[in-house]
Amino acid sequence: METNWFRAITGRLFWLLLACLLVGWALGEPAWALVLGLAGYLGWMLRQLQRFQHWLQTRPSDPPPETAGMWGEIFDGIYRMQRRDKRLRARMQGVIERIQASTAALSDGVVMIDKDGHLEWWNHAAESLLGLRAPDDSGQHVHNLLRDPRFVDYFDSGRYGDPLDIPSPLNISTWLQYNITRYGNGERLLLVRDVTRLHNLEQMRKDFVANVSHELRTPLTVVVGYLETMIDSEEVIEPRWRRPLHQMQQQARRMQSLLNDLLMLSRLETSEARGEEKPVDIALMLPGIRQDALAFSGERQHSISIDCATQARIRGLESELRSAVSNLVFNAVKYTQDGGEIRISWTQDDRGARLSVTDNGPGIAPEHLHRLTERFYRVDSSRNSTTGGTGLGLAIVKHVLMRHKGELQITSTLGAGSTFTCVFPAERLI
Ligand code: ADP
Image 1: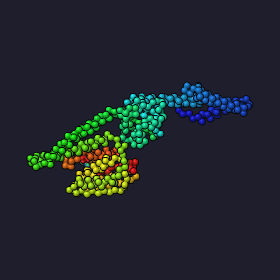
Image 2 (image 1 turned 45 degrees about the horizontal axis):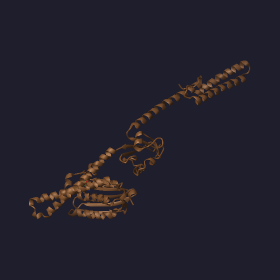
Image 3 (image 1 turned 30 degrees about the vertical axis):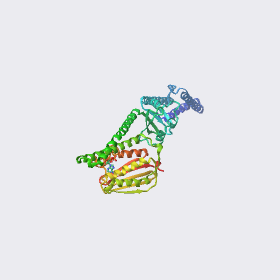
């Protein structure tokens, strides 16, 4: 129950003063009796204050000194509060220790980084994966310890949607995956995982595809060569073999373009583009692509227009960018009905530049849009066998754009047409 201190003190003082007055009157000196009573009360209060201060300063965790009345309650109240705080602190400490013990047992590295990029705490796995040393590295800026430019770019970019895979700073044959998450007040949590096994498997897959494609090229060139020679001398060939020969030639050519696309994809996946990049003038490239597309359209009579609203150049590889744009324009020709309209536009705004290829073809149903850039994905396989597509064109476009820090956006309406847009970020423009 709460005590009303004011009433308790005034009540006690009133009775004391009354008692002093009565004694004083009895002795004939009421004034002196009052003064003495008040002085005694003040002295007692000062003594309790002094005991209180002594207890707080010397042994606050011990039980408080014994005293009666109001001061006893004050001592006990403070002592209870302290014990409650202590229990709470012990419980919090226990929780922190358990969290630390469980993160220490993780095989993934965990590093806590403050809002200015300094290391605050990390677990054992982070020590073995990144070579961090406690306590020397505590408080160091993350850039001083993880210096790979790809990591520095990733950390500073603030775009942590996708993880970053790069070799470990301790051993280049170990591959690490970095994942950053923001939390609290601008702090970041860096998660590091050893992905060497996955990376090696992925590398084996890429090497296998590249090797098979490479090995198949020569035999296929021989087959195509002989088929061409045989078709060239058709007059000496029995008429019933002519149709099969033409079909064999058509399919062999299809295999050739498949192998070329597979080789191109593996080159895009495995090689580094950084060294050979140059300013590429897209506006200059477009008329040539338009001419090739018109030739490809031939009797199908598509109309192809170019709308160039900028002269911006892109830092990148000309052959790759040409191949990406050609793929989009040739797709538009392939999938748009005869006499259809295709518009190529090259524009720029403060966020970057956009190259769009719009057609008024059959369009693509929304459920296919997000899968179009997968290898060998086709909306309609029957439509494809007539167009001779490999199913790899848009995968190549996506990879080329990824290497140029861009992205492919696709919008389409069934029956009305499609727009494929290559979006390049402003930092890539010159
Ligand atoms: P393909 O070699 O089959 O053309 P792509 O990867 O270039 O392979 O394209 C994947 C699929 O996307 C195509 O099979 C086609 O169904 C669809 N597609 C691509 N471009 C268009 C377009 N302009 N209009 C309609 N469908 C398209």
